[in-house]
Image (tube, rainbow, N blue to C red; front, side, top):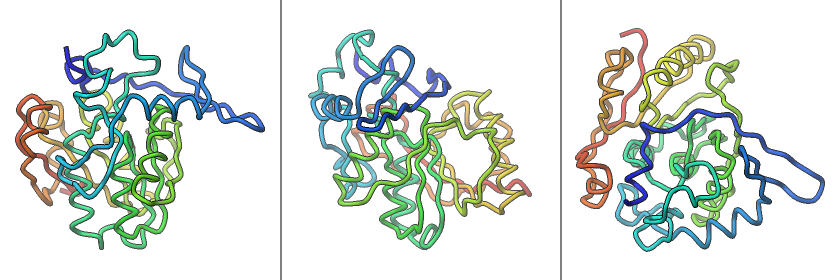
Length: 257
């Protein structure tokens, strides 16, 4: 069974992770695991490869799982952290990142939140497109380390990385919120719908969503409130890794529709 065989957005658990700081060493804590950032960096270096050339954004380098990596075929129970969604460049995030790079004015000079940031690709694309301030939010603390490493790969200072669950929290004044591949679960999609409405009504935030057309997305009520901005044909390798999905789109959330 490949990594993609047991790791899919549909099975992602929504949990809150804790970052613990002591004066000299940053620690990564999630459920039973508590490791120093140095350990996590070393583990990521040893168990990922620099990839991205076969994605929609070949100019963005990312540390990802590939067929050459041990855990591509390893038994999942041997993985020492929470499920590594940060190690896959999901098709919705690819479309979102491609759209930002093609349309830098969308985030130039803006404050941007990449929600469910994973590998940090959309945050990186926002930085490359001239965003004034970027926050990457993912409840997996290991994803925050991966995002820092991926920014370094691309010669960029890292974004602010937050690991609290921002959904249903008091909305902050972001100009733009990015969501890639977040509509894989109906309950989560409903929570997002409500929270995004609050962000828009409170701050006039613009919301962009990347998704390859999964059933949970297409069948949810939020779908009728979206305006399609772009559609991208996925590269062959991405189609093969994602069960035959062929395209991925970027949508603007417009609750007034």
